[in-house]
Length: 313
Ligand code: AKB
Image 1 (spheres, helix red, strand yellow):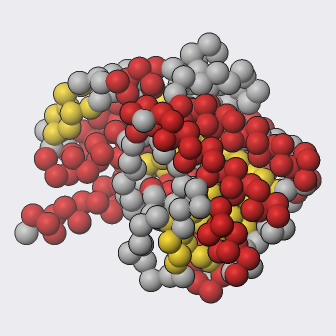
Image 2 (image 1 turned 60 degrees about the vertical axis):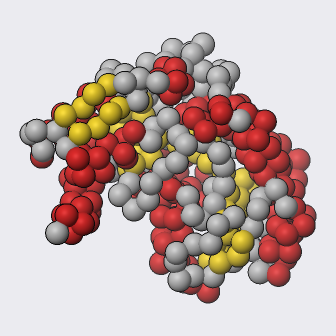
């Protein structure tokens, strides 16, 4: 049984659909603290409730866990200790329950937020020093190292990637610094106008949802001997700044207007790398992103435009 935590979240909801398609609805169990809208096997699960987690894993004979429940960078800064508890205690519960109940594999998403401004931000290499500047980033680095600890000490097969900002039409992000790159498409189609909370030149690594989901499935299915990184793999999709996405949208909506009003999230983004060097992921398990900015924009419009056109009728 494949268990997803945070199944209601941006990546969780898309991954849920993909895993159900791949493994069948009887073999995928979705969990979240809020009920889901999908017709699928589902259980309410608070990752801080270790007893409940044990029961869910034992009763359902869980073999694979995709641990996506987390508080993201911007929201975490508003309440750091709360964010730390959910991200860290939640993940330690997952690791310990996975170890005790002999779960075969655990997927753990780390992030570009694992890096800080003391590296050359033009490109973060796989083993660059990780001194993050948000509580989210600190929890991600600690999580990476805990995953490696459980692998080294107990042989628990924990696999992880450092995700760029994720863009997709299927679901909205919440509480992140890269959220602008999804919101902008919705606002362009709804109002032809967007107020961007990052600076127009703030380049960040991004990845399309289809590539994101594929990376998780490919990494989880890669032969064990190919996995040489047990902290977390750098994963690159495509890097661009707000002004680039604006230009891409303007190709389709020439009257689209943007006002740049950078807020506290600009400071967070400024301490993140512009690009991730993902050669190790390419070499070890054949990672190969397929979506550039043009393809992303075409696909976002393809799916979102009919929705907003229908709403306007
Ligand atoms: C965030 O913006 O906090 C996340 C991330 C890059 O991990 N999307």
